Length: 163
Image (cartoon, rainbow, N blue to C red):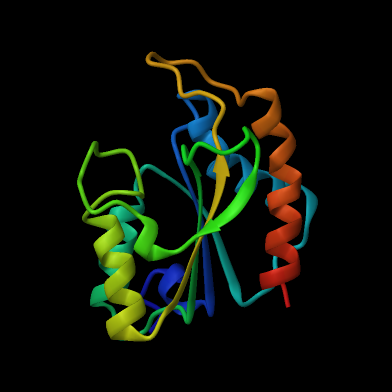
């Protein structure tokens, strides 16, 4: 079992998705960094900044005989809410159409999450933050409302998953 990636062997995988080079899209990785820098991570949790590479990880998990019981995705979205608002998205709310290769919210990543939940009995949660803007060109750094949401999301994760 040692040959399996650590994210397959831990009870819970918490994955921060997003591209730090595109403003608010970097929310997920910022939450992971905040948790690592401010909290002790329980032994049963694998906490990863997956950037834009969640698809490969989900594919590996779906093929593995050993997989986490819980997968938590942290990401930034545009659901026309107030900037910086944090909330949970059901897998049924994730669009099925592929728009680009950078988002967890599109196939095949959304399909892999649904398959892991429905066919493999993995509990999947998508925790999101409403973006203010995503720049059209490279521009790192979160907007002020999304930056303020980072410790709030971290606290939500601690309360729900750091047990």
